[in-house]
Image: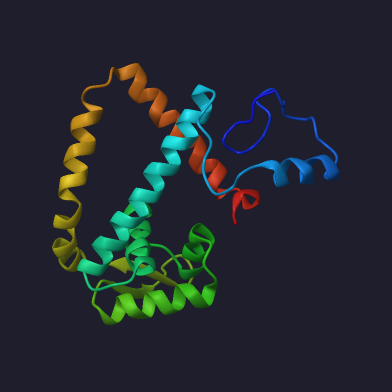
Length: 183
């Protein structure tokens, strides 16, 4: 049996489980200091996703630093751009941050002029967090190059491949929102 990137046997099927002792023995025999060479196409995809995510996190950290803010604040702005105005509790649920962590990030973003807290017309007990568009214009240039390259590469793919990419990321988004997949 071959081990995949996660250290699991490639012929393990959903629904089968190993004893705790055998799982512990397996985890102790895996070299966690490096990622093994991929054996399957799924292994290759998982490896490339990990590389992409790691590089993307560092890219966003550098963009945040250039903008004079922290990575959490930059990501909070991305969430608001992607999903629109939201309540602090919705931001906490979608980011995995504590309510206190969201409040601190929103306080910083409000002081910097990126967001405003407004009454929630659907629930007068809560607030909606909205972005101040004029402030985001200075951040747009940080992402123009990577967006251009992404669109250029996507233009080389046939429509059926693009549809598969969209289906994959939509499914991964649903998995990400599942409580069982959070650290």
